[in-house]
Length: 268
Image 1 (cartoon, rainbow, N blue to C red):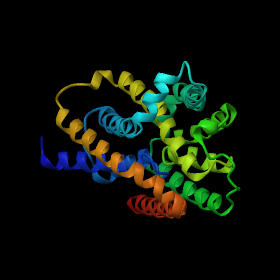
Image 2: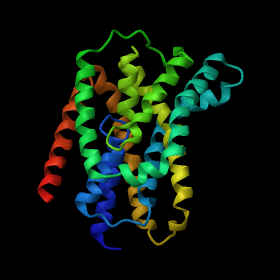
Image 3: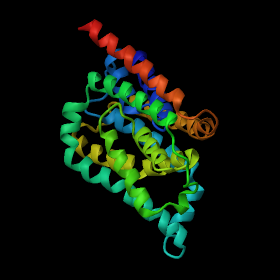
Image 4: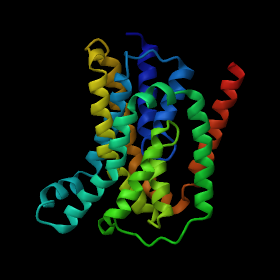
């Protein structure tokens, strides 16, 4: 196991953790960086699955009190039952279309050119939304209606295009539906749990033939790095967007996407 590969796994795990829950597309970053670094990880998508699972566990740990409370009260408490229903309804569109289009997405859309263009387009969209933001009327997750949650889930479907960003699609869609910034951001975090867990389980099943103990060191390093990085960034991003908005992420996307697009053109 060479040190360069382990350093690459560490770096990619950190990138996954830092970018999964902000609107810059973690999948897009991984696709671009794996191509740029020439990272030779485990076969199939086992490494990507591992780092994604690390980020999921970070969210579950940070919001463990809320999740545990909902699990205990889902039968007896109307607010907890509504919360669980809203997350399930928001997850439904991605579950249905993700299962249907999984092969096409992995085989056709996982491409650096697609990612670069999607990053730029998403950055422009964020800047436009920030400048035309409607006055928020929905300020509490527990008060959201099932129909509103479902519409936000429909926005998440756009993130099946690598580079769009799952959190970006859900948060920006929620903002356009007059959900307050903090509420939109935290609902995106909660929606990430079933969405990412479902994608992880499905990818594990599809790549089960590639699951061996030979690359456990690479997978373990990436998993741990993603978990720690996500733990650090999640609470920070909630505070950041309340004071700075999402425009900085829009400019970042345009810069990264534009730089990668120029590099792809230069490389021919």
